[in-house]
Length: 297
Image (cartoon, rainbow, N blue to C red; front, side, top):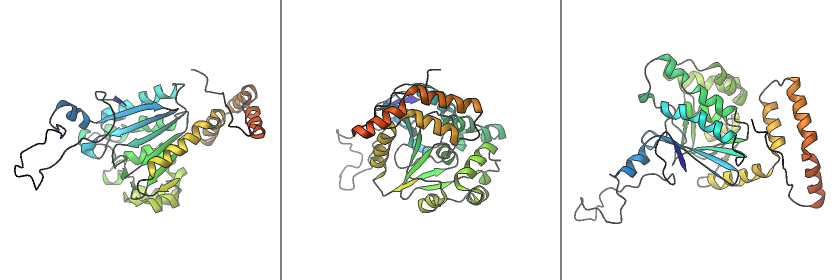
């Protein structure tokens, strides 16, 4: 994976370390096969960063800050919009997964790294949230563990959310005296309804996966150990479908659409021959070969 905000490094596994073995006569002894947890590679693995890779049409962005439950630092918030902009224009990307490193999605903003000013504390996440919401291809948040504060803000900006049992969700500005952004509040209300949105925003309390699924915050809940497999299966489904259908549906679902945009999508549908290919594939009992892709900007 490539990293934003820290030096690039292979993989995104957590740093390996081992405490003294109680059966070891010398507690200060380190086996020569143990990883060296004091070197520069380990230090880099502990640094906060956004890692990403593109494979089989799927961009995967990993929130990584192991020392703070993947809390987002100011540098990480600032790095996300340009990263998403590059992935949006990459023709190899047909869909995107946002997830957290290890057993936590994102515990919110790293408050310790923020100044006490209202502008920074309240506004630093908004450009990243809006960039994610505006990403032109399907997005899915794959959630384990805590999805709180700014983490829940990012998950809500995705098109879909899958979570593993045991995940917890919360939006916590009331704990900090922050006025939650109007656009973020409206997005939350549209997702879960006014009653649940008020519960989350007024109290800052966490809810479990059962309640999150029931209120619309989640689309699917998977048993422990089943999230990665289901996400991989579902993303393969998404990349096999028509990008034309997905792009138009995403724009229409986002809110009122100007007549010229409706006309644009009608024109694209006619010129692309996507429907003709889909119907032909149906009658010929074969997978469709959809060719349409977003025009280069």
